[in-house]
Image (cartoon, rainbow, N blue to C red; front, side, top):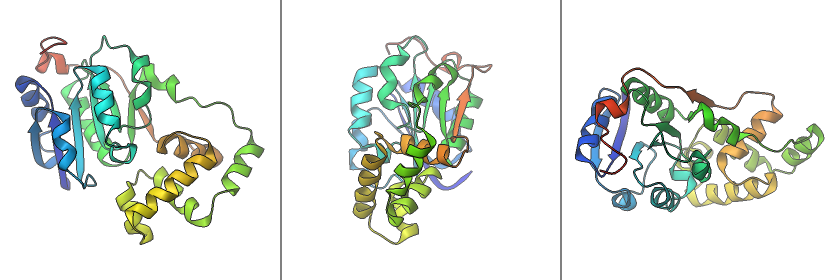
Length: 232
């Protein structure tokens, strides 16, 4: 069990709330259930929270998620319909901690929760091509990384470890607002849109594999455990 970690499950369906709760029991110290994502707006500290969001309506769900800011979504698991147009979910790739299909098993949900809790990112296999970046030459990558200040490099190193802004601030003994300034600056210098793309640049420079996992279908699916139809 994750010491001090809280799971907040979000779904418009009471039945699905119960099914998802069953899937992650034993993984968290505390599990809470709410009906709408907007009810999380009063929650300021997400450093100890994993959000499991049953996204019944794609565009509305994407807009609601992005309104929180990318730095708060690294431990968010988004459950999507298998029939969903995956291309429409591009804004969430590399931003949320995990995107999993509703045909995934309860065991896979629990595994995703453990991985996201530890800073890993998870995507269905068919979404992995969305992570491919335009080719960056070794020379350009070297020059780009060299343009970062020492503090920006330290922030980037912690980003590649899956650290949130709050944790980065604690490690470097700087405020959250200062961390955000450094993150915005390094994103601009690297020419990327979000933290995960920045981490990929750093990992490519070090010739390491990015911290992403692929998820395939399992046995007992979440749809078997409680999903009735795309509309609840």
